[in-house]
Length: 341
Image (cartoon, rainbow, N blue to C red; front, side):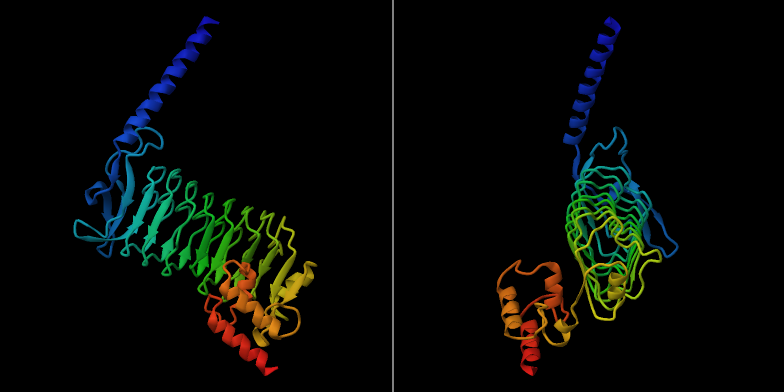
């Protein structure tokens, strides 16, 4: 009995020492990195790949030795082009800035940083590889650059992201899987292919608009998105996953799409309500009541003067000129359509 008490006391003392040591190290952490803090190697093209930090980040698990990491544009006269595989794996810092010179972020480069909450991506990055930011559980918001072409599988899985605008042409398998706080997804016209399980387990999603030029939707893409009720799928989507389990464990209220499209065929096959939006673009019937008339004009006017008047799907339908915003240009197009009738 006495031995048990002694062990507990020793355990408590060690825990307090560990905590105080951690606090002390964190209090001495640098505010931000300097160019001389980084390790690197040269690539065949004469540019540099960042491979990590010189000082040891593993004195204690997840101890913060720097608050902000600013990847340099150049190091020792070499242009920094790549952030290497697992370069900052399991390291702890709050903020990250990546310059325009960086083209590729390799596999697992920043994975499992439990306190990272801010990333400044410059417009120059083309590839973010698999697992790059997986497990960054404090990361709630990012703005991906327009330059991005490839988003690797599980690249932002298990993060705290609440909204995201996709700009990459190819979105990898599981890219945002298990992001249970993700409420809003916007897709640019650049998005072409979305891999399997990309939004697996995103339980806060309620509706989504697939990009206007997207062609391929992978298998089990929305599996486990238990609160997803509505989706708009454009005519451009011609390829669905082979096993038809796009919405596994999802109980959709409706699929919005164009008459004769793959989306309509899928909805009919799965006995999901299909809402035809064809006349919104051909006649101006944006309120989908079957008639293009003054009510549609009043409807869009109200949307332009009232923030949040439309949902994401309603916004996409009303954006008849396809510029990504419901504004005066759309009002003019709708007015002309209605006047034709």
